[in-house]
Length: 217
Image (cartoon, rainbow, N blue to C red; front, side, top):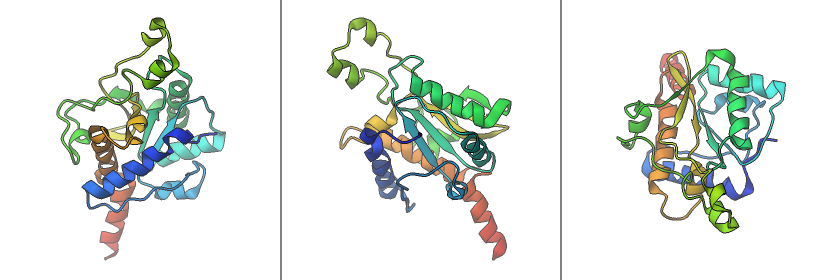
């Protein structure tokens, strides 16, 4: 059931283009990665976004938890960021809690964390996404009461296992910005930082692979 909305599929493609443009990393995107597939454990960075409720199977929960515990890194981005306690947010948070159990700590990522300086510098934290002034509210002609449900979140939420940041929960709705063709450079650069951080963090899949090849030589 967990598939990116058709309207947001372009977002990940544009993020890959940004990673290739700004860095020396040769990035590529899979069309769809199943959480219970062995290829997951070779993937250093996973981006998940949804605009509706979903449920994982027991096997998927166990696989995703094992992935994060063994060097994986995931960004879970709310596809409906303006909604307070929406179904997408509830499902993404439940996904993390069910997969990791009580070992995980959910805490805001402070502005001096290496995530914000892994490639580009974001001294004041993450850039604004699509969580404010949602285009959906304007197009649908929602009432003022509905628009007051919009929320402003000034941080990204980190999920830690011990001292390692294994996942990010985002209420920024960055996918809505990434899919655009203009006026999205800060958001794409934040995405680049997420990818780079996943590759350079101690204990991550990419670092483990590098250590293996160094040892082999």
